[in-house]
Length: 69
View: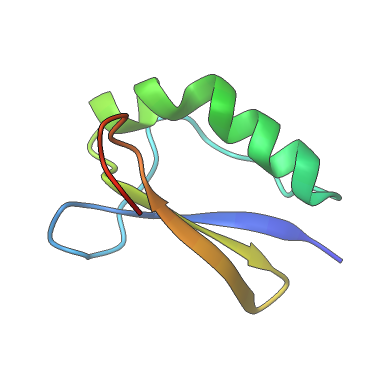
């Protein structure tokens, strides 16, 4: 099982992240990483992220601290 993030710009298109992620072996590791680098990702042009377990979408969320998912 591999956990990965997809990064999207404000218009919904996929974008390259400002901080290169790794492939994570647990959901907790993936979520911890996003918690550490979300501001850098936002500053680099990512607006939303989506977490996948292999090819299955788990959830998506805004990187804006004041936004509702």
